[in-house]
Amino acid sequence: MSAIPAGVERAGAAETPFRRFVSDFCESRVAVAALAMLALIIAVALLAPWIAPQDPYDLRQLDLLDSKMPPGSVGGGGMLHLLGTDAQGRDMLSAIMYGLRTSLAVGVGASFGAMFIGLAAGLIAAYFGGLIETVIMRTVDMQLSFPSILVALILVAGLGQGVDKIIIALMAVQWAYYARTVRGTALVERRKEYIEAARCLALGHRRVVFRHLLPNCLPPLIVVNTVLVASAISLEATLSFLGLGLPITKPSLGLLIANGFQFLLSGKYWISFFPGVALLIIIMCINLVGDQLRDVLNPRLQR
Image 1 (cartoon, rainbow, N blue to C red):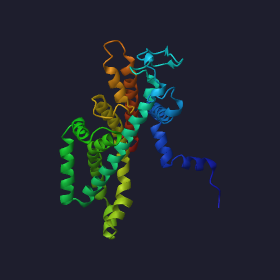
Image 2: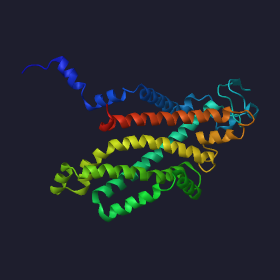
Image 3: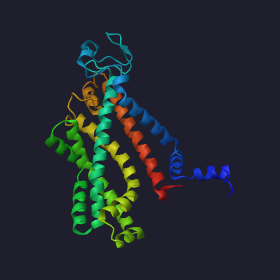
Image 4: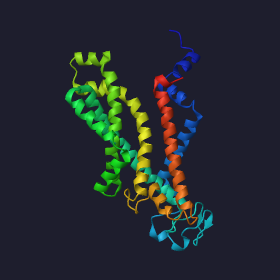
């Protein structure tokens, strides 16, 4: 048996699906830069308790004499406040690091929880059809007919404040988007020959759904999930800004923006400006990565 030439082996290895996916994703330098920035933001959020100059929610580390100091000021304890301080004397850089942790946790938790609910609802509607599909999809249509922020406001007003409460409210808002996406993809796959063959072989519903139908519905979900993570972060910030989201004892980018809003007219712009910039950057990076994933995972959009 003759040995496989090294050049042929390398060429075959380069055509693996993962390598092809990475190669297609790296064609957009903007998406690669956004992914790198997103990875840096996540790392900063996870390491905030160890790398933040101050614990902004530890009263023993705060000094009211350092309140509303402009960026680059040195506090009474000798700490350099690169982004200034807020009305309570908290270092804004540290507050943003801690706020990123809460905003990311709420966004990821709500979107993944909604994904599981919407995935189950969409698969059941597409696979069984009939009355079950009609009930599920009419419920989806009814929910999507209302603005997301309005539904979230009503749910948060009824559930109360708290991280778990706002995650539940955002899950209830977003599951319908996943259900519609999964149902549309599953309907296309259900009519294909391999699904018909599996059903003719009298395979169980669970095996057909989880072994054959589900894997082909995952690529669109990846794209939708990236977009809805950014949407969940934005909704949480909006609710917290309105005073209906997280309590004031929990760090959040929306709360940081709300805390400095009343000082904008007096020239203390940094209290709201820097948290707003952080919120803008993280949402922009997630959307740019999601756009590139859509182009890579959808064969019709590939060049």
